[in-house]
Structure formats: structure tokens, C-alpha cells
Length: 286
Image (cartoon, rainbow, N blue to C red; front, top):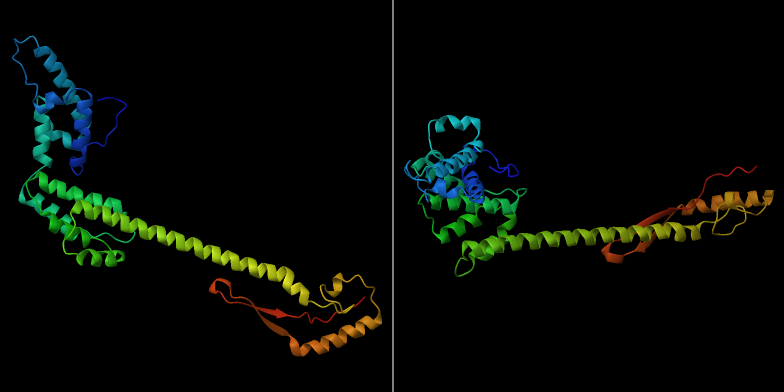
């Protein structure tokens, strides 16, 4: 087997995929015809006998190196690549009742969860269908369509109802495409709605920020000079006793109007109400 090609070793549970990979490697190395029996073993007197032994030995090595050590005991004593291949097939590709029941149970009882990968779920479903077909058990397409529909989670309830309301069920291949399209469409819509929501939140946050930076400042009144737009500690007017008296008077006058509720914005259906408190702290003047 070419050193640059890596496949999972055969463990018994992965025979169906291993078989496909192994056959591809043997074909790539021009060895599959020896394994399949297309090139039969010549008699020892045939000039091609030595070449056949050499090539079949390479095919045998490729197969054995791709089998896990726990599975090798059953292959001991087999003297050709074809014998090894047929032995593995008889071991892992059984067509008996137990395998049929196992595959049918997987087909009927497997349910996709909301967090599962949709494409993998569909691939696993059709893989079970393919394996059943390989052992001679054919499930009609209409029944497969129903099984596939009801293997989907509750988020596909509306889609399922729409399909069932049709006069005829689509083929499983067509249904597979429609399922993926429905899922991708809903996912795209969810992303768009999320982006719009974030944009709306950011917009209203900016409105509030602009109000805090500009609107509130306009309602601040300096207790030193009586002008709006700044507070006493930032006032450039020199302090006198007269100013202090004015400040105390302003404080008393403002006690009855501690809070002002202002409707700032109803943009994007968001009602933003800001409660403003006028500064009423007792100021000590140096």
C-alpha cells in the first residue's frame, strides 16, 4: 500500500467504509484485478506464474496492513488476496436476519436531535438504506420518504405538514434536497434577524449616548453663576458670598423637582425613557 495513503484500519464496525477505501487503494496500485479474480492464478508452468505470485502478494500485504491486529487471527492461513477479501466479506457483510433487523431498526428508530448535524443525519439514513439494498432488502421509496420525514426534530413540524398536504410524496432524493433547503433558509433568516436586532440595540445605545453627551448637559445649571451648560466646579466666574446664597436658594427651589422624566426616543419601536436628576448636592465653597 502506498505510504502516502492512510485509511482507518478495519475493526469490524467500519467494514462498509473500509471496503470502499481499500478497493480504491488496490485499484490505484493496479492490484484489484488479482483480488477480484479478474486475473486468475496461472499454472506453475505458465511463464506468468511468477509475476502473478508477486502481484497477488502485494495485494495481500496491502489488505493485511489495513486490518487491525485484533482481526488478523481469522485470516491466518489464507494464501491469496482473493481468499482474504472473501473471508472478510463473509465475516462483516452478513445478510442474515440479525443484520437485517439491525439495519431496519437504525432506519426506523433513529431520530435527529435539534443540535445534531442535518447533513450527517441524512447521510447516515441513506447509508442504512444502501446497506439494506446490498443484502437484498429493498424498502419502497414512499415508505423511505415517510421515515425520513419523521426522523427530523420538531423544528421541521411546519415543513413536515407542508409535505404531507401534497397529493403525492416527493422522491427521497427530491425530499433530501427540500429538507436541506428548508433548514438553510431558516438558518439564514435567523442570522438576519439577529443582525437586525443587534443593529437596533446599537442604534438606541447611540441615541442614549448622544443624549447623555449633549441633551443632559443642556439641563445642567451652575449654582455659582446661574448659567446652564456647566456645573459649579467647572465655572470660570469668581466665587463670592452672593453666589453662595444664590446656590443655597437654588437648592431649596429645586427640591420639588428632583427628577425629570423625558421621552427620548421611540425609534424602532423601542421606548427609551431616561430619568434625569438635577444636581442637588450641598456645595462647600472655599
